[in-house]
Image 1: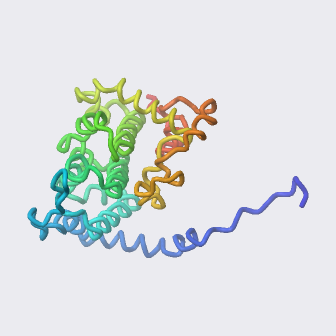
Image 2: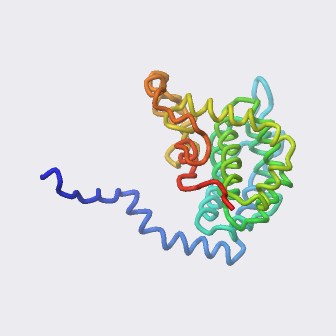
Image 3: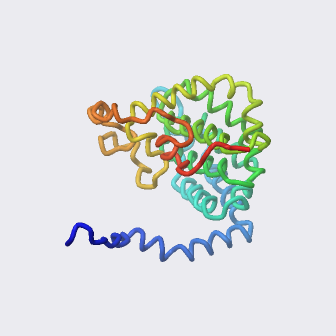
Amino acid sequence: LALDEPTSPPPPSAEQRRASRSAPTRRAFHARLLASGALDAACAAALDVNEAHAIELAVKHPGRQAGPPFTLLRLRLLEIARSCFRESGAPAVDAPSERFWAALCGWFFDAFPENAQFHRLFFALVSTALRCRGASKAHERLLATCDLPGRLVAALERRGSRFPHVLGLCDVLRLHAATLPPSAYARAFLRSHGAWSASEAARLDFAREANATRPRGPPDIDADAALLADLNLTLENPLVVDEREADAAGEDVDLRVDLGSPYAALLGFEDEAPWSS
């Protein structure tokens, strides 16, 4: 083969072929969920699916009492919502009630501090909603009603299994706001939020620290293949970085964490630029 001869692109993988074949069915399913009001019902069911578990049935722990378990059914219902949010946009993101977002925030910040599967799913749901143009109801419910910025700032100081997701959401809010005009609701709300504004230097320090210690950028906090990665504490876990690799790559790390940086690109801001009037 001549060196200057053009090469054909690699054939699609089996997973890509399956996704392509299922796309029309998936889109039709999401459209039907929206048109029938079933998406809101599915989100409501995710909140109530554990109601049969009385607090007396909670799993006993030698150090504390855990709440009723976070069931697989609840996880699957939330995965349906995530998929619909991503493909159907603002109508889907605005469909769930205020109670839905309030419950998710309560689970993430208070009820399930060690549930890595839910932490990743919460990041996916919330980051998709925050970045969805036109989803004004969801934005108001998350930012004002649930006080997401204030709770994220408070959680940053409590390092734990959800720390990468807390920092990731702080970065999503910061980077997304930078793409919006000053009059946009989200940007104006964050600018007027006392705790959020006061924590700017600390949030940037955390982002720079994460970027410097992970030469590939932020942890893989949203890829489906990593759903159970937090339970596999090996070097194959995308949340665990080989220190030798980090040291070897340290000189090549792009230290920027703003729009246009590799750090921002790995959070989904590949082609985003700051707002310019």
